[in-house]
Image 1 (cartoon, rainbow, N blue to C red):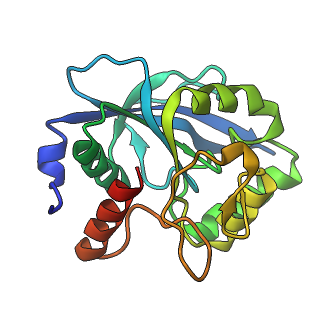
Image 2 (cartoon, rainbow, N blue to C red):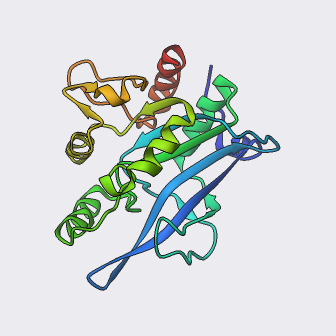
Length: 215
């Protein structure tokens, strides 16, 4: 199968997300607790899959964000990014209607160097920035238990490796016992869950083909 292009996918799926702002020592940062991809015209309570990646990257809200915490954030329209279009391709292949994306960190920053600097500020202020941190464990368990599948897909960065170990999700190329039901295409030599959006179209199709066989 080939890739379905974005201009076609957007006729079939819509994206919403829970955005909020978090303040650290007087600086405000855009955050996203989760994003939800839904097949237009389908109402379904069960989540087909939760996908875990490193951070929200370049996904942006379609309107003004007024929430100042994850607890008060509600779903609002979002502008899809290229990774979400790739996940829509997976949804089409699996005939899924609902997919939720959560991240090792809620910090909305596509540049990894900038992301590491911001994450360090949260650490130094002892302030939460992830659904996987202890303060949010109940929300996390509720979400993950509601899905048929949990897919790990945060890629090769050392920051993702550190956070996934810190939060008790993944270590030494394997999921922890609590996440033994997860699915991922693990790099055979370096032991990380491969990201859904590799650089080339050929490799995007290979990721989709591989995940389709694993699910």
